[in-house]
Image (cartoon, rainbow, N blue to C red; front, side, top):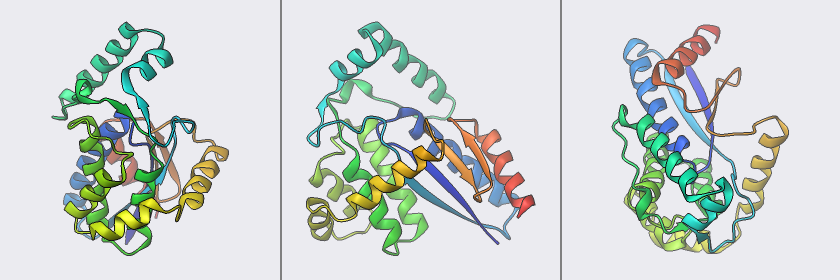
Length: 219
């Protein structure tokens, strides 16, 4: 039996990185008990800030305008770091200079999923994009940054550059994000287990594991 988990996410969302890590833990524990089940994780696009310029914009000024003050931004960073500490995740917010437009990053994942990359490679690539942004402070809206990440996961760098410099699949990615919005997804991360059970937010690994077990029992 194969169970699908659809994850609606945006790469500039720190809670999405935390949710990804917790889902990974939940799946590992679930599969240890249920080796008869295969789990396939599919990543779906969401745009927290669809109007971000394609070249991106300055990170701290954007956040301070969005949340009202530098103190509010610092408080957000502290909440994320506190929540992530027990999961062993580090967030180097101070290294981030650019708030990117994430269309290219979403297209990169869409390309990998729709062109036959193994689910394992897709998960590795998703994790690499999150880490490049939140740990290394790299601009994940940049074609060459994304191509380097794809190459590190086994893809041909030149082909990825050609793809990202075109508009291929851009309409499809935007259409998926818009459809999810119409279906009621208003925040991320958002998990859909086997197209039947939805969980919103960066819930604990235990909560995500319980949802996965419930979906498996109902299948």
